[in-house]
Length: 296
Image 1 (tube, one colour):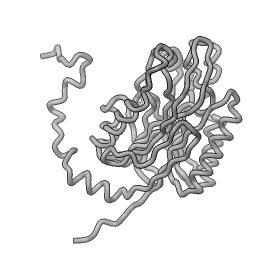
Image 2: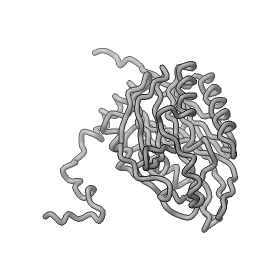
Image 3: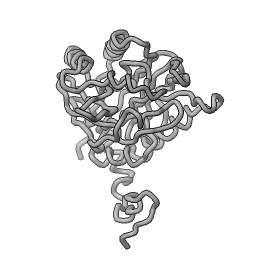
Image 4: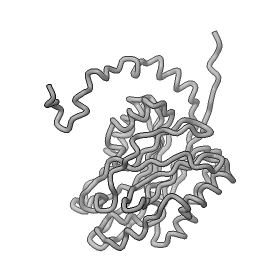
């Protein structure tokens, strides 16, 4: 019997504060990508909407001017060149304008600088300080994976991370790693509430239930809006295939790296039988909002 040949990939999660100037934020993103690549990272995750402060704290129609089409997007073009130079894979979060529609999107850039595709955030939150439904339409791409130079990856965005169906869908399509760029922090209506452990645990569950590493990148820092302020807590992390935290940040700028043997993880998933023993014929309640089917 032949031995499994190792197929090792090194991933990185980054976190940093986002200031008022787009140029400075993109410069900072490039700096941390270069630093992560210097540590051997091949797939590098930046936080959600890193080009600007998190503008969804308020409903301000003028902020729609921040959105740009994917075609000829200056930050995407710059990240394509960076990926090409460093031979790294970059999922890049942007505020996308598509004709009259606006999306919270990620462009996946392969290690040769080519765009592999686009994912539009599916689950859109709406609450004090996180008023995303004002700015973003629900994504229409569905959950997707991309065969990059180093691994098949699934990428979802922030609020998507609370929904196990999203992670499972990407896993079923063949994702070997799951990436979540995010922007989460304090709650304006309850300054004493800290969601960071809950936020981590739900994604650790995705890792354990699918036996896939999960990489989450958050922003840090205090940001003042018109109606409220948010303190982003960072706590970016990398979870292993049993849900264990293998790399962790606090509330300071950070670059986390971790290597995984994808061939070994694939063998382990097969051995546990979590996908073999699924019963999708019994999961029809998941296709409804209230758990009932009125067609019966």
